Length: 330
Image 1 (cartoon, rainbow, N blue to C red):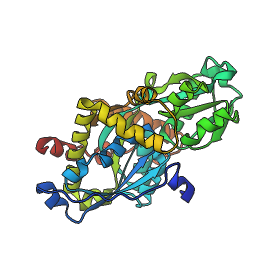
Image 2: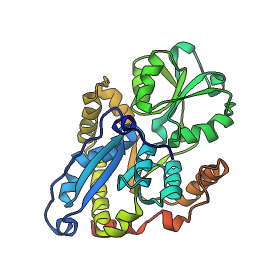
Image 3: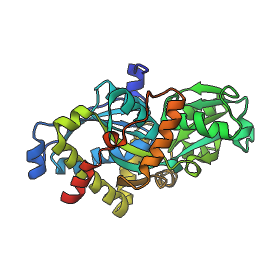
């Protein structure tokens, strides 16, 4: 595993610690003394988790949490393998690698984000298709889930075999600046950076990943935390069900909270541009049907690429019992 540098850990936002006070009632009594170390990525995929931490819904469930922000979920996964963080979100390929390397388990699928991930080419180059990127410089967050999906699947299917383009490794939050400076020709990126690139006339979206992959994002946990604090895991998932209700019934409130995060970090985008980006995130905590065949497909790709040692035991990797308890008692 690549060692995480302090710069990667701080990312664009800095890793901060947020401690939420204990609430009252049965959840509070059950969770007294438990502090959950929450990892999240600072792109759009991590924003439902950011909203969870800022909404007060964890307080309601009696949970205390420390917040650890990084640019991409694969870095959170590495932190969890190293047991520096207890929980974090990332897509299927990163989760499978984390399970293989560190026994990480999924306690819920939190969202589907295939519409938020895209290949974006510089507008001034007039590129119309992925095949036109042959020989070009493509910015990619190497090791991330969408990075793996692009390199192992989408690229080869569209005339971009490995070695037919120059992969430029960088964090997703650095890619717009690189596109603007013309040091790269395209990027494999996520929202809101794709929407910003379009709104600012820097890039054009060639394709998003939803046509080939819905990209479910999981909330993973270390087996240590799950074994030691099963009641806290259930209370935590109850808070996630509350978050899903806010996304459905009060999207304006959700968008305002998350939009303020990006504007506070210096990103200039209109509320309409951000709402367009946020609208591509489908938040629905649970374990939908058909998930195991999807994960098996990605595991087979990763095994072929020698990124994991074996196909996971899905009953051990996908721990559905906690969400079942959360739904029964929420």
